[in-house]
Image (cartoon, rainbow, N blue to C red; front, side, top):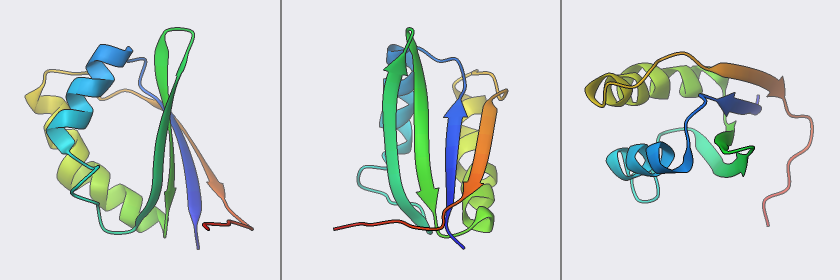
Length: 91
């Protein structure tokens, strides 16, 4: 199963960039992550991720993301939508 998660933590670009730098997912790819992208919408960053499974996404959250959010003193609250993908093309 492949899932798409759309995430809004209500962070601005500066906070997103600091978190991105701390996680370094550009070079340290989390197990099961197929794609990560971000876009600024109305001054807040929205993240889209494609994962091999919900279990991979949950493991990333628990083991990597939540500790990083806590260390930075950031809110853990987020609006998260999860969808099963029926078709995905990765050229």
